Length: 284
Image (tube, rainbow, N blue to C red; front, side, top):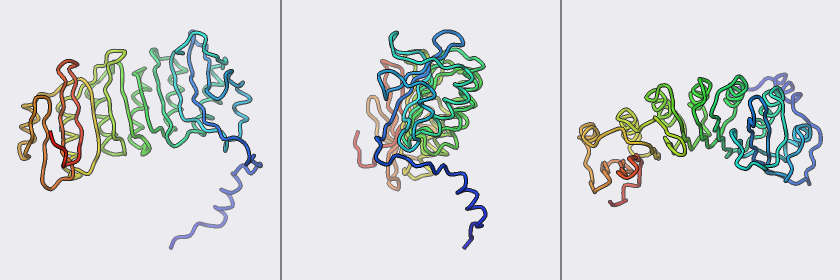
């Protein structure tokens, strides 16, 4: 059996902050909202108090007692939402790194930034170090794409929602599918609400997901939803070796050897499509 050198263990132990934590203290989980209210002027709001703590107080919080389960970046929802000002430098060098260190296992990121800037690019660069469980991402410049590509190694990611107009929609949708194939992502949306979205569930997306279903013999659980970009004829030709159950709105491809069915559901009223796996015993 391999052993870890004693000196290495001592080195790691020396980096641990052994200041006494208050074991009887109250554990808190906070949501934080960061907004650029006017160009270059950032503010933050938290859920742990009616009036957000000053940055110095927040950074001095006991790291064992305070966790962050939600980071939202974008406009405040209320004009009178309590907030604290934070400089661009302290936002990128202190607040964001602190929040990433304090992320809970089921943390959520909502990035709803409409315009790109040097500061927001820096924020996205820092957020790549966070292992979020759920992400809602609006396109906001090249750093958004880099952030998305990094999620292929985020084994904690279970839900991903993409919004807005992406410069290369087919590349972006394939990046999202790659994340689904390589990690633990189970739920993927291409969402056109409230802004339009140019990503579609097209044939390459269908093919990649169908191949994943076949390779796993129905073991992988996933659901992908978005504007329709594939027609039944394309899907039926590709899945010609499989039986199917067909209804007005659904096609369910199946195999006696698989633990699930591959279901295609369409909605003509919203021009959307859902690709998902369901237990093999489900009926349509």
